[in-house]
Image (cartoon, rainbow, N blue to C red; front, side, top):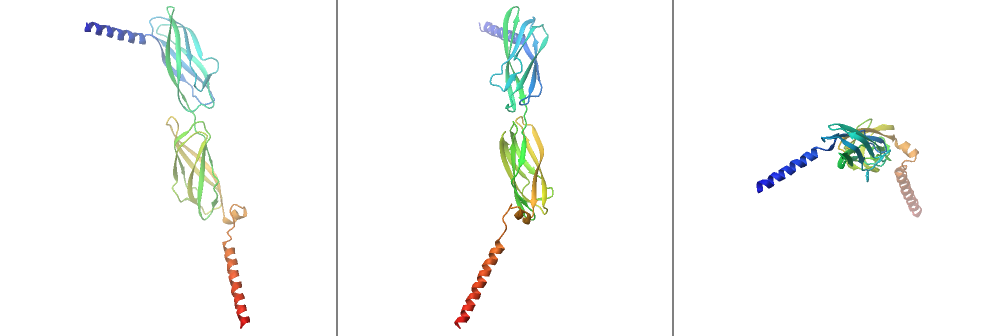
Length: 277
């Protein structure tokens, strides 16, 4: 009895495997690069592994809750796929401008007829949206020549994708770096900002172009290295005072005033002493 049950179970499994192999299947999926706000095309090659022709084939995409929309329709129809043949189903879509970078799974439903009997199969395909961070550098720091200066570099990400493991590095270019030249930021999301501080010294006044290297990974763990330039200006102390960027140092004037008052008081005291004599 047990042997008979085992034979029956084995036969059922073999039949199930044959049924799975003998059906319409997705042989290949190709797509153009998908970027937020842009049009793209998905091409799905469907193969007929049946021992009969398939009729009235309809392939449709379920785009619900996904950042994609069809330019025309989200389904395509073919009259027939012959036995051991394949057909290409094309879908023209547009990605939302706010679509975040990452991998998206799109359900695909394929309906067809074999010998007048309606059948359907569900598949899932994956689409990768590529978006890159867009960095802008700024700084409110002022540089005075012939003294140590701390500069704060503000990094703003205006792109649609975040950056991971962000590191900022500066190199010497007409100035000396007195601090470490690398600062680790970490993750910087879209529409966010962070900052890094460095200490530099320069003997010159005038325009200073600071080369800034940004190293990071995108959401797909692809590594990037980007070179940007931050434009600052170095001033002499006299120029900075004249332009009102810093206040004039009145220490000497104050000291001189106090000294003068002391001298006057001593002279006054001495004269008063003489008059008494």
